[in-house]
Image (cartoon, rainbow, N blue to C red):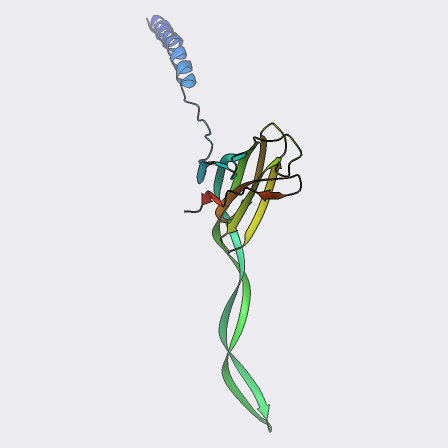
Length: 198
């Protein structure tokens, strides 16, 4: 009787394992896979289209700004009261005086890395005119008040694509104009907005 019971228990365990195994396998395959998503930029938008005064040069594009943490190193000045002693006619005289020190320290700050993409189209590329090229000039004003300029030209029939980048821009403007191969010389649009830091 004990022998039969052991056989029955063994058969029952085997049946339980046989029916439970597929369920366990399915449970393992049902675990969701985590996907990595791209980070959302701090700012992303299109700009333009802007045209030159004669409407034969046209520029448009997009600007993307990423906000990143960075260490900012600087010199910190601090004071400390110290005891200073001097000898005068064989007598020692001590006074407490303030002494200044400085040390190199850092703090976490944010930097704003920008990328400006543009498409510059030349609607009048033929002939030997002094205005046969399309020009775009970007003006970047930094947080510190600095100003930088970047220019691109297109003297051909096909649209030209350009890109430049930098960091910590408070304002970015673009001016569209006509010119020759050397530089822009007419029909300027005036400064048009590309990006303003919020």
